Length: 141
Image 1 (cartoon, rainbow, N blue to C red):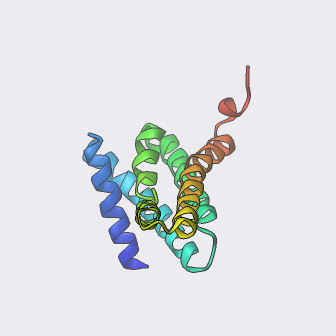
Image 2 (image 1 turned 90 degrees about the horizontal axis):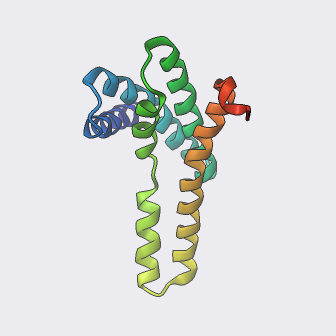
């Protein structure tokens, strides 16, 4: 778990720097992403479905970003986007395309559906966090 925390921090920090965030903001995003992504990976290891683990990871990233936003004033989106970009299921997409290329449609389709569910779960987790933490956002005018 410690190595996952370090690797996740480095990945999210790198994404944040690529998005031209200041170093301090990138470090905060790295901490949020380290917690959220490590949680997602640990849940996956505990046999939680990948999409559910992605939703929970994104929810935690959104909740932490909202907390940091209140404390430090950083824009929520500058903290959440790098934190969830690392959760995009590249391996699942690769396996889908590889198996589809081999005309193994059942296996490729299965990987494709799993990847799509994870891709959908990420913004849903962020939206759920926003609904829980932003009173103005959850009510329509």
